[in-house]
Amino acid sequence: MPLRAKKERPDPETLALMSLAQIAGDEALFARFFALSGLDQASLKASLSAKGASGPAVLGGVLDFVLGDERLVLQLAGDFDLSPEEFARARRKLPGGMAET
Image (tube, rainbow, N blue to C red):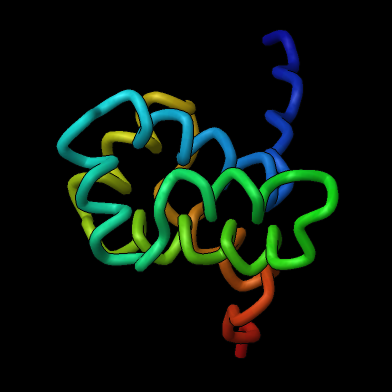
């Protein structure tokens, strides 16, 4: 039986950016993200730029948004070929995340 290579987990920032790209591809979901996050397109872009010091915190907010909708977690997990638990694991590693106990 051939050995299968272990699938690498995306780092938390990458997973959040991948999730944000999927959210941005759905107009209604993107509007909901903006409404719940209090961000607008300009502030989102600024926070994710190389100079945006709040970038990691915003990425944590993206994962909070994803984790607040079980259907979205399952959809993205399937799209990215990841277990749903990866989103919570990644969230814990970004600013504002709760440490594992």
